[in-house]
Amino acid sequence: MTLTSLPAPSVGERAPRRPRDPQRIAAGVSLGILAILAAVALARIDISITGMFESGGNAQRFFARVGGLSFPEPLELLQLTVLTVGLVLTGTVLAAAISVPVAYLAAANTSPSAAWRGVARFIGVFTRALPDVVLAMVFVLLFSLGALPGILAIGIHSIGMISKMFADAIEQIDEGPRLAIRAAGGTRLQEFTVGILPQVAPSWVATVLHRNDINLRGSVILGYVGVAGLGLEMSHAFKSLNYGLGLGIALVIFALCVVMEMISSAVRVSMLGEQAGKGVFVRLFSRRGSRGIASAPPGAAVFASIEAAMHRPWTPTRVRNVGAAWIAVAAVVAGVVVSNITWSDFFTFWAKVPAVAASFWPPNFGNYGFETIFNAMIETIEIALAATLITFVLSIVIGSLAASNVAPNPATRGGFRFLLVVIRGVPELILAIVLIVITGLGAQAGTIALAVGGVGLLGKLIADSLEEVPRGPERALAAAGASRMQKFAGATLPQGAPALIGHTFYLLDTNIRAATLLGIVGGGGVGYYLLNAGQGSNYQLVGSIVIMILITVLLVEGLAMWMRNVLR
Image (cartoon, rainbow, N blue to C red; front, side):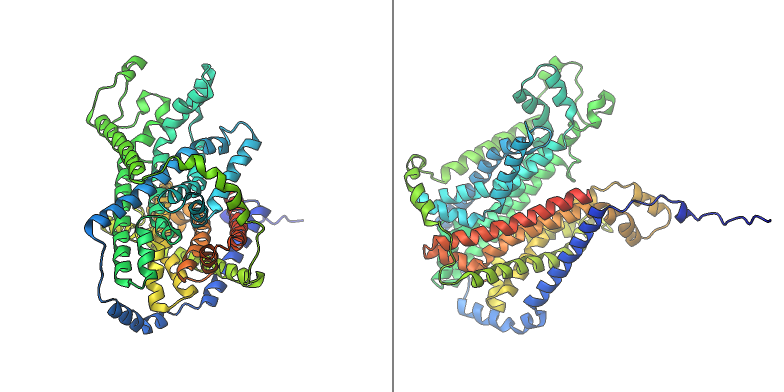
């Protein structure tokens, strides 16, 4: 009897295999289904690039009829601009202040109990799902026209996203300082102010600045429901067919958004460094820096004792930071002052609450009927899905070339970063109006407007995520002779994929609400019926549409949370 030797197993056979996780398989199937639905939605909307070029004559005839741009008087324009910036800044700061306790209760490592965490998370999701234009409608009824309805609408709607980002930052802190304060007998307030706040402050500032940029672009639509500022003047101009003035104000809004975006970017770079998470403030409170003086970041001050730390010298960096803080405080105070808030309204509006609440109940679908409103909501979802698919494809290319570890040279990276800044400065509403002139009313204009506007957001998030991946796998492939494309496909993109999926779901969530608002100016979907119902005081129909939007957004939010947990 002879024994035959079996062939040695190959390297691939010896390599450990990852066990199949049913939830990961389900997540992959869900992603595939969403991609198919997005492709079907894009096909149903039937975007025709050749048709857009052929209809270019519409734009020529329109601009010929406009005859040229016009602007308000310089002093009036300055007042409107200052008022718009003031109410946006005040609303954003209001949201940031309310988001601090909400985020503290929502974070897993600081929430007193699971019940408190659930309540705080629900507040975040609920306020994020409420369209700011609907909130503005309600507050106009309670406080009349002016800046205050816009401030409250922006503030309450922004709580959802700011508190979520704040909570995520708290969950990622180094627990050492907080636990040390607790062991020394410190109170919860001391734990927060000394052990948590210094670590999360840079991330929180960046979040608030980013949200302020979004709110400035979103303030345009609030003018259509009576909120004072540039948006209200633009809506009056278009409604009175004064297109030259309307487009002139739109150009001013675009320039203002670009300037605000560039200022915010400069502040973020100054505080956090070129890449998020790489700046001096983050390094000062990183885990690495807490292990000892030897690991202190370059340029950080090292003190021999606590007494020495309490009497820090006034270095140029400290002077700059303190000066910037006082400028920020002055800007907030100025924003409140120019908003011209009638503070006594907060004591008198309560009498109007029962009547206003009763006007929204019970929800009904009016003369349109359920089928019409439901089909319009389906069209809104299709617009959001199709726009997200287009944005995803474009952002993969543009965002990758804006990442320092993917772009072939710094000039390419800088050029694409600047392109993303410019795109983010264009309010989707203004882009939709221009596209409606070219293509006519309908879902096509709304989809393209959302798709182009989304590139500015998703492209930046993708670029930042790709720059933050560990560089070890990239260096290994480069050492093995891999090309730039092979290094990108084999190391950079797979590591950034989980973050990319999360960012895409965030964009889909945003697009559902934005698609609703674009319908107000003729971009297709349920927004048309929402505006008509609001202007016709049919608030029961407004309530029905809001409930449909809430259900849709909550379903997307639940799917996104499950997907992030499974693919983490």
